[in-house]
Length: 149
Image (cartoon, rainbow, N blue to C red; front, side, top):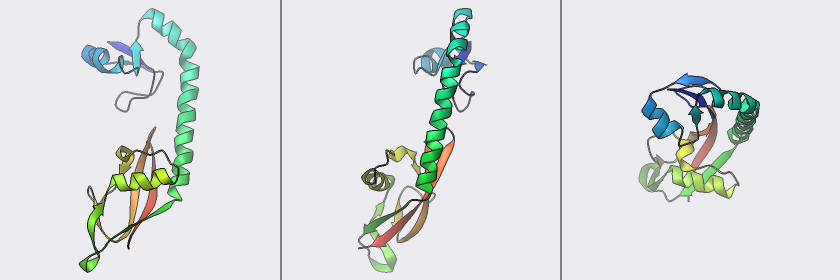
């Protein structure tokens, strides 16, 4: 089935392109989620009219994500935890903790967007780089300092 993408989909293409996908994928996922519409004659004509608006919206969202990434890349957050022997933390610092600190600073970041290379949780004092996936293929990298109380 041919569909017109209303939004960019990572494995398929950018908004406004016509792609061929399996019928089930289109009917059960793309169309119900509003990511695509069926590419028949009527929809192609209708979509050509809306295409500029969608491309402008996608460009604006990408620019907003890039601006947020620039701000977050300059950001350093500090989390204090109780420390035991050999600078080991009692407990750990997780994406949920990082999300809470970012929300306090006024950023609307969910923990699903936060990725760090040190496994699921950070369990030692130190300085870490944390990636935040902002969508539209934009990532930010902020500095996290874990200090003892």
